[in-house]
Length: 210
Image (cartoon, rainbow, N blue to C red; front, side, top):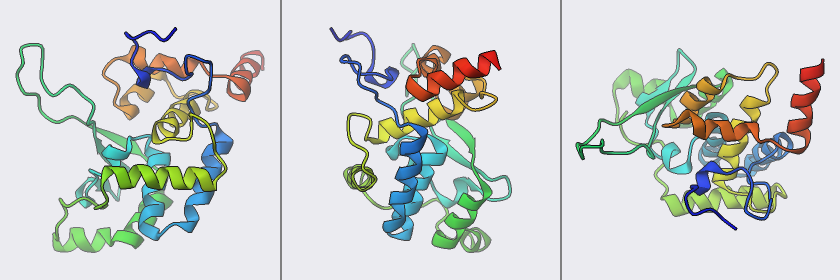
């Protein structure tokens, strides 16, 4: 029976044991399938893949938050509690996520980031003007094209796949770093990525005996 005290975000498997994260192969197919979208929408898919952010967080990215020289993207953590225990409003929280330099160059090519920053033009306007429902439909369309079916074929599944990829890297990214990159309030949330299955778990075990 599903435990109502555990948030869905904190699970890698459904109550029926179905996988809720994308494997490395599925993540690769998702990227390949995004190539048939418009340049702007393709970049949206790539940002989700490389940043491990929620679609709503990607929609909030502005030119100012793309650190061209550092090859990082600053993400506003939208699921953080907006008030403290006393009910006082908390400041917005951000996290900096390193990304491959080619992603930065492609974002610049599509959105003219360097030109905007140089001329200080609308650098606080979001890169993507699509609505959240449109963003979710985009992710679903690309998943379908990639032949990814099941409960993992969602934006959340892509985000979970990011966490699994980091924890199964060789060497693994430390959990406290993954927690920072994913914007988790509690490091215990990040520990779910140790519950990996199939080839990910097999890889971890084989690395332990190598």
